Image (cartoon, rainbow, N blue to C red; front, side, top):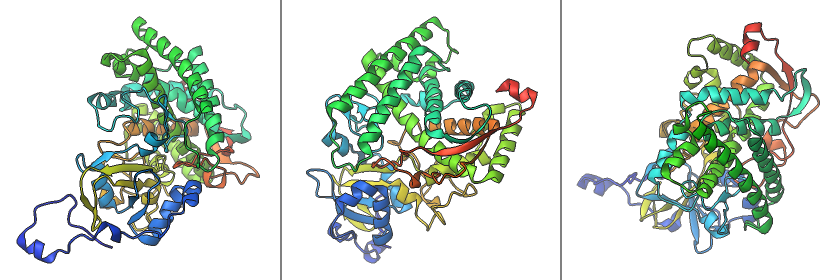
Length: 492
């Protein structure tokens, strides 16, 4: 494997200059003689992963963007860290959005639904990390103060699950509702059970069905169309009603008093218009709901096949509830609950394509890469690197070193939501919601393999053709309610 000393460039001694080989030219980067555009559209990250397996940690491919002849994909952990952590050599690029967006909606390859273009601090029209966007981290930090609201919202969703058990239930739609309720806590600062919230969920669900149908076909037409705008306008109107209700509740102080750390509360401090606030709320809602749902359905499928692991989880969560910290223990990283969620994030990475653009000529993995070259990181390919993750296609919650806080090149660059200054600001929020959802579900149910069903894992189902694996035909499990003691039942 070629190595380059410029990671990042440092002054060299005369001895180093004499002994270190120069970086090879850009044209020498290995890669396929022709880029299979059809396979790329149908298989996406599976295709990129196969190219890495064949050609190595750095590959050069024909670009999919007009005006750009080539792009580079990298997989080496230290190179990945270099690209994501540098604040000067690489900038965020939204070539997909720029080429396929309208003035109203922005195309986004990593989300099923597009983003609203007028979300000035959460849309893809700003390539520079803004102070306002940084300040939103207060709302995305999943602070302990929000945990009770998350728990109330998730348990409210569980009241809609069967009381008598079932041999077959599609968990995709019910988890959509559960995660939606939890994410709305981040928007409002507390659990919000109002008619307008239900209307917004219904609008989002109908809109999602539209885009699932649209993207269940290979993405040869990525342009935003009139039907896309129709469904997104319906969501926009429903979102405006919810936002007004939440703002009114904050004014009346009828929520938990956490307005200052809620997303809407923080945006009010910025003086944004209602339209900008609503667009930002909805963009955050799409991003924050989609990834946790995808991971949770996969995790429940895995737990249904591992009753021993599931019972250990149940015992651990029960023990947590009896401690003085209670649900605050969800923050502890030394737990089976944390390990299960982290391994799910590795195995079923929710954001599988990250793109940066070189701001100047630079060096990657022993090759010179010119300015304005798009550098892609296929997270699924990074997480499937057998050198760092033995048996990468196996779900193994006993893996060590899956630390989402620090991008550690030594552990293979575990980065389910990207990383660095331009990474997803809501990654800790998403992980906390997934832990809470998993804890509440295994506390109430034994999750079992669906009788007579082969429809277990996402890869066995029809999926949308984007850089996400989103199940189209449902994920089914069996549920058996647990016999809870009186004290625990009163808490649920």
